[in-house]
Length: 144
Image (tube, rainbow, N blue to C red; front, side, top):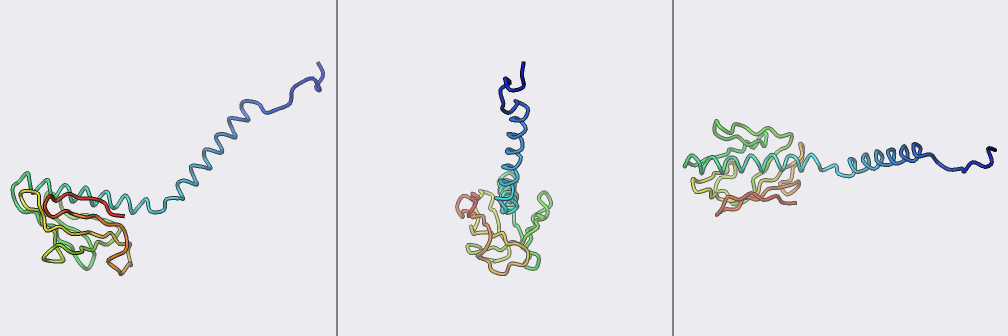
């Protein structure tokens, strides 16, 4: 058998290696394509915290007030909830009689409003992601 008689081409191992390398490169590109992933995670954590506060108000039949510290932009609630530690500032917009607190009633309702998640050092309250809290139901929805 001559070397010229052998078919030329790539082996299965070589083809698999190329496919694995392409998959790794695509994964790296996709990971870099979404820099706002941390903002989405912060938004999810804040949404969970607000839902827990609403559930606590309903279960215990009392008003649960979350205080917003204007200096740090962090939320803090009663002992079962504690403070919410985020690597961002929060700004409460509209709907609340006091601009520094959000209260859930025993029936789950609230004054409503929008909580904006601002990156550290951001000044404007209109920037960043946000969560809307419905006044009648207390339902929490994510805003773009």
